[in-house]
Image (cartoon, rainbow, N blue to C red; front, top):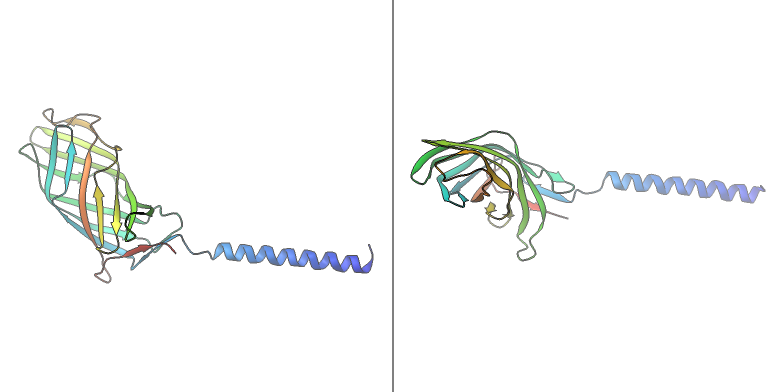
Length: 205
């Protein structure tokens, strides 16, 4: 190889290496697809949440998330937030009072996209739901996934009752709740980041 050819080869190799390093650096520093501001620990509250199965509607006076966390960023929208502790008060079904307890934690909030009908809303779901209800002559478990959206303009996480992936199991509830029943959960939680007392905004660049 002559001198000119060798120099050309060296320059081409160096340029290729530089481009490769630049691409790697750009990829490493890429902005996450979703971000939340502010973020960190949060609490949330809802009034009159309901859980409807074919034969009955379970109603509670209120529900609150007392331990949760909103992530600063998420590349895909998965694990945008978690629900560590959630409670329900003054609940009843068919005139039977009952208590609700989490049986697995955390529940995970995932963002799936912007609502095409409302730019303030991001669509999502809650996975890992696992809860147990107990009352006089009535016990049941509910496990699965619920759907809804987060509204940046109101700071509310809305579980809208859609989907068929939240189901009853281990049910013994006077025929009001049966194994395999699809449950429709509806609630509207006002979310507040603990450090600021304000609701987060979840956005995509």
